[in-house]
Image (cartoon, rainbow, N blue to C red):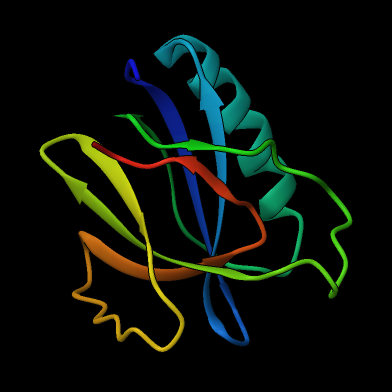
Length: 117
């Protein structure tokens, strides 16, 4: 699968770091959309931990507003290294160690469709 740009959105919540992801074809499209997302999030109550656009092979189902508690929560480890982002699923009960700055343990309502290869 070809690399595209992934908007990585990490916010602090009661349960730790929450993630949202937006795939785009170009850096310009990603940056334009990130500006809008940042404006929306800054007017809310969830502090932004990280919001940026990076090349990635990871592809997610589209972000949906108003998700319910009944939708599954997915656990991922997110790595930001060498100007790229990769995302891997964590199995139930699999430990994750947040190493700060470049490796994050996150939860998301979005399903990873194509993992980093």
